[in-house]
Amino acid sequence: MTDAAPEPSPPAGEPAGEPAVDAAGELTAAERLAIALGTAPPGTAQPAVAVPEETTAREHA
Image 1 (cartoon, rainbow, N blue to C red):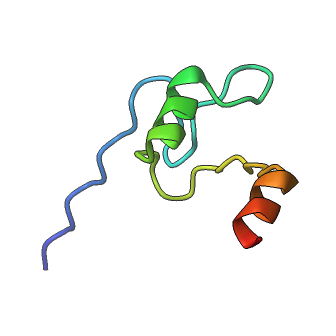
Image 2: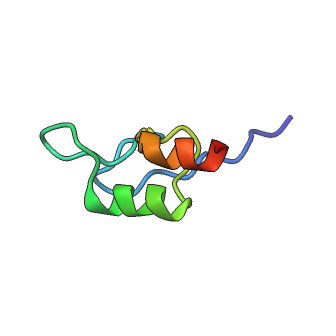
């Protein structure tokens, strides 16, 4: 029986599977950019996007 290949280690300074956050607990600029571009890894917190009410009312009129 052979052992499975070891999992690749995360980049230095970043915990495995966790988004990069600054000291205040906020996402870093790189993480926000990845989310905005849709390239963030699964499980990364996605910010809620507020849609103005007049936009939705106009679309349904």
